[in-house]
Every structure is written in structure tokens, then in C-alpha cells.
Length: 257
View 1: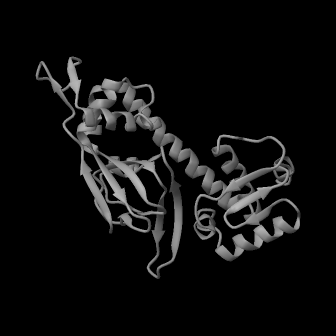
View 2: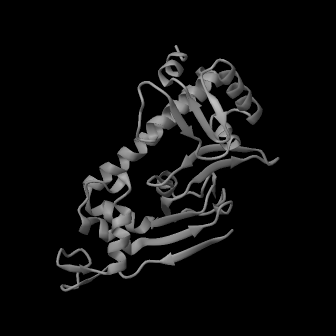
View 3: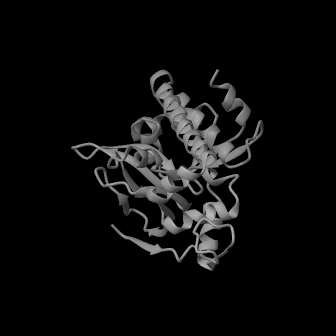
């Protein structure tokens, strides 16, 4: 496993000797970490000094492409925020087959649920690209939750949203065809790019390999490729490496009906 951890500097110097005192001066490195933490939806709405209190339990991590961040059965001591790159969460069967559960991108967090369960990881995490992450220790999270009911509600809301997405995944795998899953995925990628085109030509860049995406959609790579060929023959898409060109996204959307 090729990863490098960098502990963060002291959070702040308090003139009153109270780590929760409002009268304090942020350490420059802690201020930088606080600004990075602010990128996560979990910390939206918190004041800078409130976010800064978490930096005492943060360490920076650099993980090379292909390296494992953790394996199933490893102890969980907190959760992660992805700053750059992509992390794959997956199950590995006894015979080596992989099922991708989720692909985590910059600005997203993972590991909160396992942290609260106080159990080891049930999946493995691997870097799909060179990654920069922050690890936030569960001790500091628990301490801040004890003092901030609003933060508790944010944590609960975040976990509820994850559960909602999990239920949506189960529905998709159970009730939707492979063709519908792939079209739905392409439409979501367009929305995640910040464009959300309602009509016209669109190009979607797949964030990782087709095999990884196929596993995420609960499809074999062969089935995934076959459906892409079928969509190409129907004139709904053209494939250029990892770039999917959609001549008319409105037509692609209507093909789901």
C-alpha cells in the first residue's frame, strides 16, 4: 500500500487556554485545513471557527493510483474527505471477483456509517487515480457532536441520504434493465458535470474505466460493452475511448420511456 500521511499542525493558540474559546488565533496550517474541510457538504453552514475545531483530528493523506487505502476487516478510526482524485469502494469475493459499490469523487466523504457502528470496514477502498484526502478522526467528530446538536442533524441527514441512494441502487438493479441503467448513468453524469443539458448534443467523459463502471451498475463488462454497441447502432450515442458523445440528449432521455 503506497500512501503517505501528514499530520496537521496545532489547531490554534487560545489566549484563554480553552480549546473551544472563541478568542483564539488559528495556526496557518490549521486554517488551510479548515478551508479544505469547508468543501465537504457535511460542514456547510458551519462558521470557520466551528470547522477549525475539527482540524485537531485531521491528517492529510496522499494515495497513489492503484494503491489500497484500506481493506475489508481493517479497523475504522474515522472518515475520509476526497480532495482530488477518485476512490473506489468494492467487495472482493473469495475467488477474487470484484463488485464496485461506489465511486467517490472530490468533495465527497465516505466511512461515516462504519465509524458510528464501531466495526471494521466491510469493503475495500482503492485509488482509481492519484488522490489527496483528509482523514477526520472519530474522536473529534464525537466530541463536536456532543457540543453541537446542529452538527448531529447534519450527520444524520448525510447518513439518511446515503441510505436513500442505496435503496435507489437496489431498485435500479432489481427493476431496470441493463440498457436503462447505462442510459440513466449517462444522464446523471451530464447533470454532475454541472450542465444538465435539456436538449442538444452532449459529450460525457467517463470518470474511470468501463469495467469499473460496469461493476458499479451491476453488469459484466461484456454486457456493458454490448449495450454501448446497441445504443451506437440506434444512433443514440457514439463512443470515443472513455468519451461518450450524445447527438441529442433529449432523444436519449425519451428512449427510457
